[in-house]
Image (cartoon, rainbow, N blue to C red):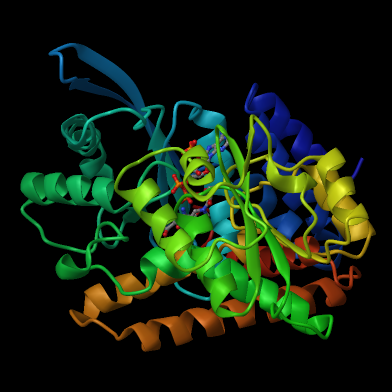
Length: 445
Ligand code: NDP
Ligand code: 2IT
C-alpha cells in the first residue's frame, strides 16, 4: 500500500462520518503520490500526516432569541487548519447542512487554494448550522452577535480572518464586524468582505464569480477560443453565480440557466441587462426564489432539477458541493460542453471530475478556479494594513493576473508531475508544494 493510501486510511479511521472531508482529502492525496516519490523529505518530516490534521478545531454553542421571544440554539465552528503561509483565512458558511465534516472539507481545500493565490494566507473555515432563510434582519443580527460573542476570542487581523460563504454576505459581515469592534474595542481588518465605507475592498463582491470566468477564459485560450458567442450554464443564483453571469455577459457569452435549492430557470435569450439587475434585486434585497424570474420573464422553470441537461459550451457550477454527478457529466459531454470551471467548492463529484478529464473537457477544479474570492480578500487585508483603498481597475487587474498565474502554475505542475492538462493534479501539487516546504522550514509544530 502506498504512503498516501495509508494516510487516507488513517484519515477515515480518525474522522468517522465526515464524508465530505474524506472526499476532499482523497482527491488531494491521489494527486500527491508522485510528489511524495520525488521528494522523500515530505515523508521524513511527516508533512502529509500533519497537513490532514487541523491545527485547531473550535466548536461552540450559539444561543439567540427569535422574534417571538423563543430561545434558539445553534452550533458554531471554526477550523484553523494550517498557518504555514500566513494567518488562517477562509469564509463562514451559515446553512442547515453545516456540520464538522463540511467545515473540515472546506478548510482543507482552503489550504491549497490560498497557497495557489500567491498571497500570504493560511487556511481556515467556519460557520454554523443556522439557516438564514425566512429569518428577519433582526434575527440574523442577533444570531451574528451571539456567534461573534464567542468567535472574537479566536480571531484577529494577524491571527485568523474570516469572510463570507454560503448564507454569509455583506449583511452578516456587517453585523459580525460591529460586534467584534464592540467587544474588543479594535477597528481592524479582522473580517473581509466589509462594506466599502468601512474598510472593504472594491471588487471583493465580484471577485469569486469574475475569477471563475477569468480562469475559464484561460482554459478556453489553451483551446484557441474565448467566451464570445458561447452558451453558458450557471448553477446557483447567489454571490458567485451573480457575478460569474455578469462577467460572461461582458465577455460576449450568454448565460442561459440559474438555479437555487428549489430548481432552475432556462432562459434561452440569456440572463442579461435588466434581467440580470432583476436577479440582483430578487436575491440580495427581496431574498426571493429563482422561480419568480421564470414567472416575470415567461421562461421555463424546472422545479427540483439541476441545470446540467441544458445544452451548453461552458458550465459554471456555482451553488454547492456535489451538485453535478457522473450522469450529469455524461449529458454535458454528449451535448458538446468543452469547459467546466468550478465556481463552488467541490461541486463536481469525483466521478464527474474524472469523466471531464478523461473526455478532454477543460476542467478547472474549485481550489484553482474559485480562488479569486479569497485572493481579493487578501488584497483587502493589504489595503487595511496600509489604510488605503485601491481603485476598481487596480484591484480587478491584480485579480485577473492572479487567476492567470494560478492557471499557468497549475498547468506547469501537471506537466512536470506526469499528468499534462490535468488541472486537478496540477492545482493540488502546486498548492501543496509551497505549504509543505514552509512546514518543513518552520519545524515540527
Ligand atoms: P450564496 O449563499 O450567495 O448562494 C448560494 C447559492 O447556492 C444559492 O443560490 C443557493 O440556493 C444555492 N445552494 C446552496 N446550497 C444548496 C443546496 N444544498 N442545494 C441546492 N442549491 C444550493 O453563496 P455563494 O454564492 O457565496 O457560494 C456558492 C458556492 O461558492 C459555495 O460552494 C461556496 O463555498 C463557493 N465559494 C464562495 C466564495 C465567496 O467568495 N462567496 C469563494 C469561493 C467559493 P438557496 O438560496 O435556495 O439555498
Ligand atoms: O471558499 C472560499 O474561498 C471563500 N468562501 C472565500 C474566503 C475568503 O476568505 O474570502
